[in-house]
Image (cartoon, rainbow, N blue to C red):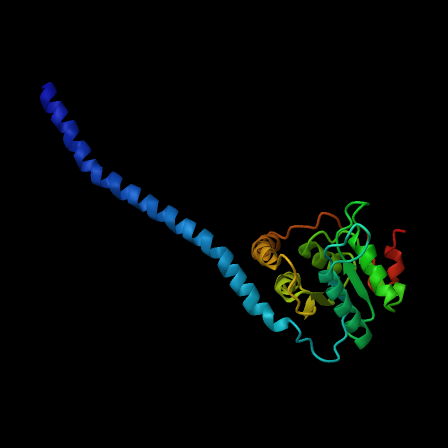
Length: 241
């Protein structure tokens, strides 16, 4: 076969294969686009589901129901040991619920990962100064995140039912985690106050919900568990000073 004929055959084959290559490229592009769209849509879907489903469990606890504990989630504490306005609102709500008979125990859960920064002792002191007996206030020193606070309430403090106290925007996620872990939980929202930086916190919460969906799906363990301290015991067992 002459060189010219061979060259023509090769060109003809290439021409026939060209449409197939274009089809494959288009198919690959469509698949990549679909994957990207799904990846972008999932965070919005997760947020819509969490806020839609768990909004009905905020400030709707059945009247007279007694919970194993009132779980107050931590927030910023200043260098002098005073609590931020956001945290004070959470604590005031939790104390109010304690004296109304919602539970005989308060569990304050926050960040005490460093000696210099201690949310939980400040929270307990705030409660005790307002008349809550010290033995009724338990401290979770390793509540470094909402996820860890909820899981440790169940695993370490052996709670089966909890009334979670925080700002409303935060409670959707806390209740989602509690429900996924099999806890009987309701939320109690702190006073509806607009704090500085609220837009940043709402954006952060959007991402945090996505993160905690991942943690729930893959059953991520808390960084620390430690020995069990049943909530039916004495809260002073959690004292570290």
